[in-house]
Length: 301
Image (cartoon, rainbow, N blue to C red; front, top):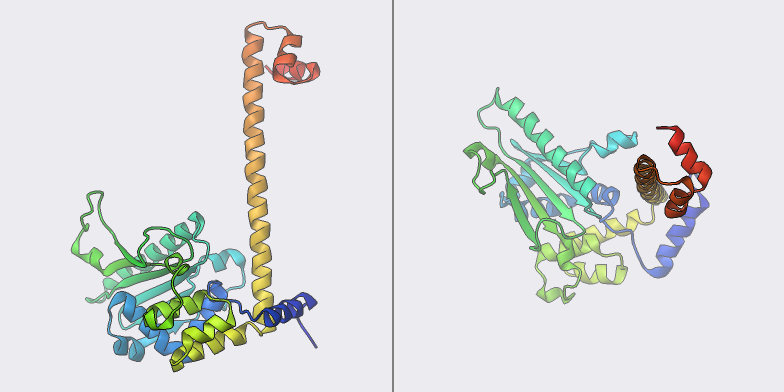
């Protein structure tokens, strides 16, 4: 018995017909992809490439935390990382920010500082607190136009506050930098190929990017399989609908806020004119209000 809607069947069929997949810019796909043990080598490579921590050390000591899967409440889910990895005494969180809007950046910053607080609490018992690192994959340009940029805690004069702050660092991956890149695979670094596979939704291009690299070919196969999974597609479809509804609600709220502000301004104009003993008919003519509305405002003062 099917537990998903006909709409999901149609989405899967349409993806097949177009030769497309749901790419890893979607945070659900992103997390499912890199919590797969078959992706351990690529995840180790990404973290090593960005942080310069030894890849073999990461691979041997990496523990991926499954926090998102058990969270069903939407508000609680917003307060989780896309991916959390512990490597020895280091805590590394990876965030996929497809839209990279202000709210997402604020939430990621809150995650980062929360991780630091937890790490410092443990430091009372341990000498080596390790590092707290956040790696953000940004779908739109944010902090820098560089492919990889790093941010440390500094004062306003760009000085590191104290030596312990060197343990806390954010890395920003600017995915938009690759949107116009030449797809000639021979000219791409392996890191660029991985990022492009995360971004790409055309099967033909995915196969070209992965060709000749067994780990990347496994990565592409995983993405293709997820795009055929009814439960994954249903979840993503529901999340997209929720986001659309949220954006419409925010737009309506902003509109109402603007209308309320305009109404209050109009009331203030009427009040000032009444205080100057301007005739009711003239006020109505000037403001575009009915005389009854002007009289109603007058009665409230």
